[in-house]
Amino acid sequence: MLDFMREGGYAMWFILAVGGAALVNAGLYVRKPEDRRVAVLRTLSLSTIFVTLSGVVSGFAMTLHGVGENPDLGKDASRILMIGLAESLANAILGFTLLGLAWMIAAFGARRAD
Image (cartoon, rainbow, N blue to C red; front, side):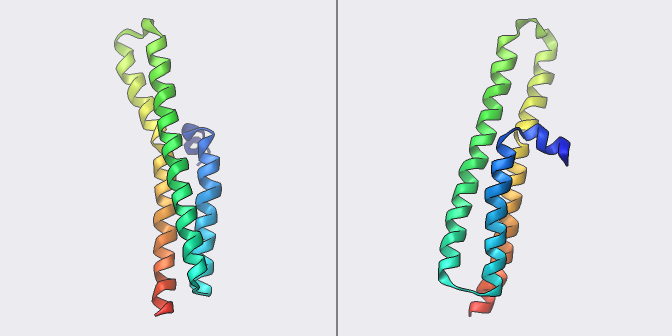
């Protein structure tokens, strides 16, 4: 797990914080279904999406910058590029997993609200 967090970089901690808050809010919505909790969940979800995309894009940029800056890589450049891009996607894995779980939990709250 720590390797996964390290691969994603600093943005992983922001994703974990905001996505975790969305997850907690979804749990609160199940306990007490109120419209205001759905509004908060939507806002936290949007924030999680933006932080996730920021992490992915910054990872892509750092990878491309690092490979482009080192002309001595030769045939290893494509391998290093693939590894860097794969590590950048750790942000998307964490962010979208947290959002999926949050909204799955919120679905139970929506069922209770009916």
